[in-house]
Amino acid sequence: MNYEKFRTKYRNILVTGGAGFIGGALIERLLKFTTSKIYNLDYMGYASDLSRINLLRESSLRHILLKTDLSNKNSVYDAIKESSPDLILHLAAESHVDRSIDNPDIFINSNIIGTYNLLEAAKDFWRNIPDLKKQNFKFHHVSTDEVFGSLPDNGKFNESTPYDPRSPYSASKAASDHLVKAWNYTYNLPIILTNCSNNYGPYQFPEKLIPLIISKLIARESIPIYGDGNNIRDWLYVEDHVDGILLCCNEGIPGQNYCIGGYGESTNNDIVSTICDIFDQKSNIKKSSRKLISYVKDRPGHDRRYSINSNFISKQLNWHPNYSLEKGLELTVDWYLNNQEWCHKVVKRANYKGERLGTN
Ligand SMILES: NC(=O)c1ccc[n+]([C@@H]2O[C@H](COP(=O)([O-])OP(=O)(O)OC[C@H]3O[C@@H](n4cnc5c(N)ncnc54)[C@H](O)[C@@H]3O)[C@@H](O)[C@H]2O)c1
Image (cartoon, rainbow, N blue to C red; front, side):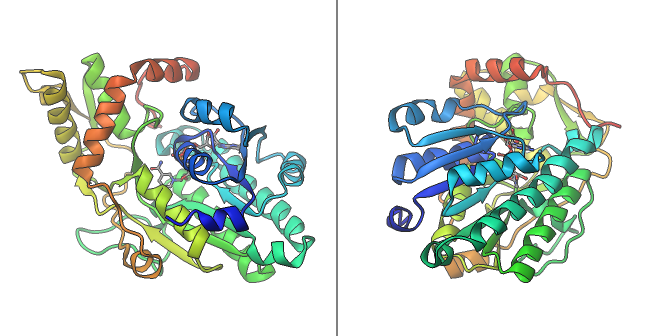
């Protein structure tokens, strides 16, 4: 990765959602390898945590937390004014499909209204900055492959796949993507949009599939698999995703969308079994943990298959994942085994007890 461009082009970076899972990994990288000042806009919701970057932010003094709710327009304008960004990396969103089924309101507010407010504030700011800063400015919107809907047994999503979102979460992300594209077409705001597949890795709040399974394994509790377990996801290690975002900031073409997948297609059945086996081997458990697996009622509207064709970003920006699914899973299981205190802390703070969500 060429971080030199960050030194010259992006002195002030506004990251939204930087107290979340992917935002934390991204800010860690920016604090370690650039000299940019990082303004972290996050309303510090239930899944937010700054442990990952605590040491770095204390030592570098280049991290400024802006505790701001994107759905409050005036506060968003204040945040843009304070940060005077050369680059906006927009990751803040409510992100758990199950929670969107139970409570769509907050997804509409954060993901749609929040993105709208940020676009408006960014546009008004961008229009009034000096020419050189204007030329370098980028607004990068991080989205998901879930906006494309569900695939049959074959085929892959790519940059031209039509949108067909199915859950309140994916519909809210699709709406935000459309707003972002409209602000590019209509106002020429230099946006880049990435649609990535399911991320995994350290510091992911343990309600998402992979950390939830590991937490259940550690607690020796039953591991729930929705439906028949044959739903397929394309798993992407979070560091590979961060590489993709940073490459887009460096070399991405304004107005372009890029699909980022991990070449890690797996059924839920396979991924859960693999994690059980890695866990048993690392914890010296003799009787297979697979016996903890139990099948539960399917998620309403559960998409069957996601899969991304990453050829475009590979060819255009030379992006390639460094972590195979096997390697990434091993690192992730290791991390959760060694960081149980972190898990206890975040689930306690969120008052989450590993219960089933999204059955409405
Ligand atoms: N995790 C994945 O597998 C995945 C896959 C594809 C795309 N994405 C996208 O990547 C982005 C980051 O995902 P993540 O997994 O890190 O999510 P996360 O839930 O871990 O973090 C999201 C952060 O955004 C903040 N936030 C939410 N609403 C806000 C608001 N109104 N104002 C200010 N802050 C707000 C939360 O407090 C949280 O810290 C999201 O946009 C998500 O849609 C995630």
